[in-house]
Image 1 (cartoon, rainbow, N blue to C red):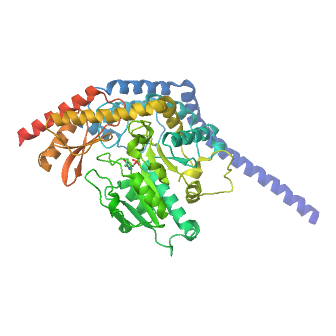
Image 2: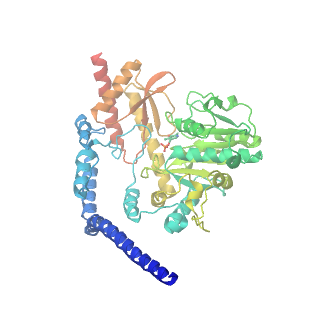
Image 3: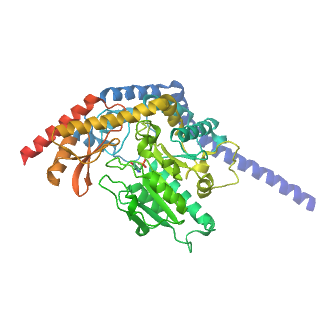
Length: 500
Ligand SMILES: *Cc1c(COP(=O)(O)O)cnc(C)c1O
């Protein structure tokens, strides 16, 4: 009875299992079948390469149109963007149609940053070989979290780290993290600062956190960048706790107004004021900070590159005495976007602050990029940075950066000749322009310049008055681009004052 029952049980088990396998296989096959059609389609697209050819043709069309088109998109181009507003598609689409839609509706609604007459914010141009590098490496589709995910990305990050250290004459022990931009780089630098200052006090911030932690102090200039304030808020420093230091008429911290420093202080200085381009006096302040055991971070999103030139290096004198630095590739260096760099002379503090682990993560003897960034998965942005540095060489960095400065000086001279007032010393690539009119008229002049399509500049407030802000940030900008833009200023002023 027992015998029979047992084999009967086994038999049903076998049949049951067979049935289950059949059901699972069926479900699987059906899945794979529907999947297959999409995969077949994508396989064909990839093998045919016609989508890539189309993208290239559109890209060249775009590039050819940029020099003469309106810098800011026309009202029509912007209104056409409404064609993008639709329900999320249910069925898969046609790759070729998607590219066509992007080119016909999207391209005209882009801002012509890659032309020579965009002077808004601090938006860099793009060096051809870095753009081409981006195309090539898009085919690689590398993740740079770990060496084991991409030996090539790891190697080029290491090479960039060495080159940048040499270019900026930073301490030998300096390490680099390749992040999305300066905002993220500042965040990392200040996280390292927090880690170090607490560690010096015997407080393990990662474990013990902020509850009951001894208070740190944070000191920065009144002209500090919004990205610094954002990072301080994110990191829990508390904006009400910032000790702001007065600045001079150029936007530089007045060193003599610094409060007494101690070993609980994080100082955030600036290489390149976002309006005037002015540099804080690093030499003096960094020496004081070092004596006090304070941490200095230098935000040099676009200005740090002055330290990589021979002619403008004097602006960054003493910056090597700081502990961390943030800089962008995508501004004055003209790499593609999404290229921020954090440099830190205290590797242990940086990697300590950005620690992460997991049983599945295999670290290596080689550079594992994720130790130096908040992200794990990241695209291989340092390859474009490497291409820029390899292509330019230190001489080329000098020529590029000093060239931006030269054209900013030309811009300011020609504007002065036309009766505009330049409110800053044009030490770098930024110009603060007064139209010598009311704030309302200045705003109208700005709008009129923007509407002309001839060039694009933004406005700001500078020492209580409305001003025009100019940033010369692209290698493309030529002397005639500058003169043509000055004429657009003159025309806009005439139009505005005539109408009033
Ligand atoms: C642009 C800029 C930032 C922010 O950098 P992102 O790359 O835009 O994040 C910070 N500080 C200064 C001085 C800047 O010019």
